[in-house]
Image (cartoon, rainbow, N blue to C red; front, side, top):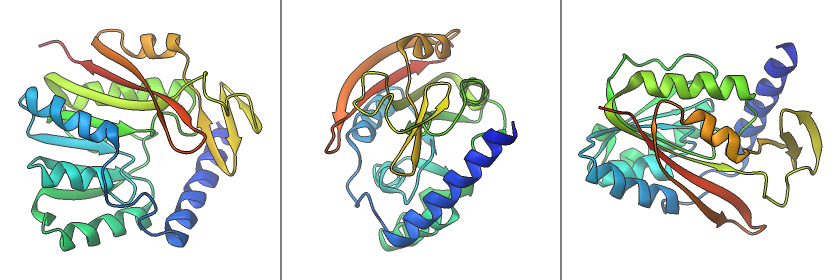
Length: 220
């Protein structure tokens, strides 16, 4: 546990420094998974969305511009400061709120209180399998029956899998960022008790990174 706590604090500091050095580093345009999620959430009749690992907010602000009420969480206060400034500039402050939160802790939300949860490359950060399982349990807790969870992760077919510093549990650190690469077995295990709607492979970035976009829903 000490090693996991230390790794988490190192990663938090690294992200704080990164957002400080590169404000709005991912730009203002939403990610492709967020655009897809918006359509899925709307079709499901969702009104309120939680984004885990929102960073400086390109996806959370997109959801807000599309009319959803969004609670954006991240463990980087600096990233969320940038999100709030952008929300004000885009006139969506009333639909976008922020929560500084480490996903290794329980989500600060009531049971069955949200319609949808989105997480782009958050579950594949420096989290152990046990921590990921607990987090998905928390997502299940806060979703209403029929709620939708869409997340993306880098997987074991990625070019960086096995490269860099090995931390065990399929976690490898490369360029200062630690990544937990998902196997399909892990995806299936995290969907137990849910309806697994889709595991969609896609690529992103210059490497390119290889990811899955997973959509799963809670039974009504």
